View (spheres, rainbow, N blue to C red):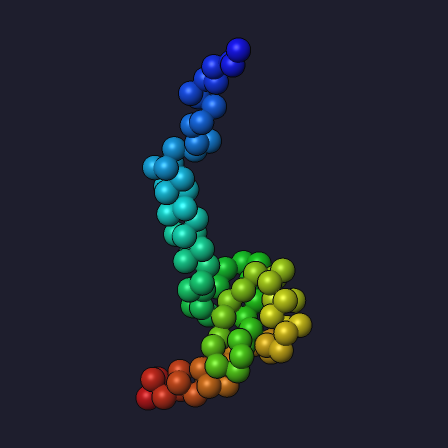
Length: 88
């Protein structure tokens, strides 16, 4: 004799709409982090020159990671030249 398996056992753990909402929220949070520039710097952040072309404001913890893979502390020289040209 076989036992009947309840149909609830085959339901997904999360409803697809809830999963999509969580994914969309995560993307919004992460996209906000990617655009941090020198003008968006807040307390607890450092300025680093990322790959000699883009000045970024990163958290103190992230600054160590950037500096360990070749980025340099402070704004990029290229950005300084652009700022000087735009001030004229």
